[in-house]
Length: 214
Image (tube, rainbow, N blue to C red):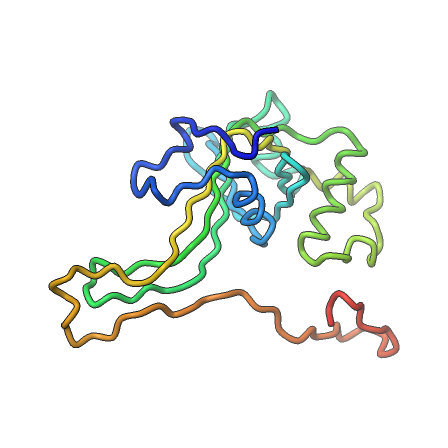
């Protein structure tokens, strides 16, 4: 397998092409770190974008949803053209000039035709991976879904073929003539951090906290 995805007209940025990355390692790392994705599709002639949960197994992106939701029903017919995006914000870039304010970010865009996962074994693997994507180790530390719950849950699969990442790193890019202006400039780091776990009110006090939450 190639170490990089091949750019296509749909995965080539029109601006800041130097920020585009096609190597699988970068793309996979961003997909695996992000906790949500945004699923874009067309419904009744209008664009729709929905936030949802995803996971990646090798070169397939799995997207969690309800069996009765619009995208899942549409995909059952003959697959559904989609655009899936994830974004991680790493910093707020504050420049001396309004024009050069920016953000440090890492993002991925994947386009293609998604399919409904009908194979029971593949569906189970995908849902297991979704739970572990939320918190590694969780899938084996909860009750598995029963038949009714599985029927109410749908999974979309999108093969990672047309994919690109875009990354902005570094500091302020002010114009030379603005460098002496009396305004603070720099980067405010931004990150996602988990807080102290809060036990459910009905939890048995004797229930130990799992190691993956410590």
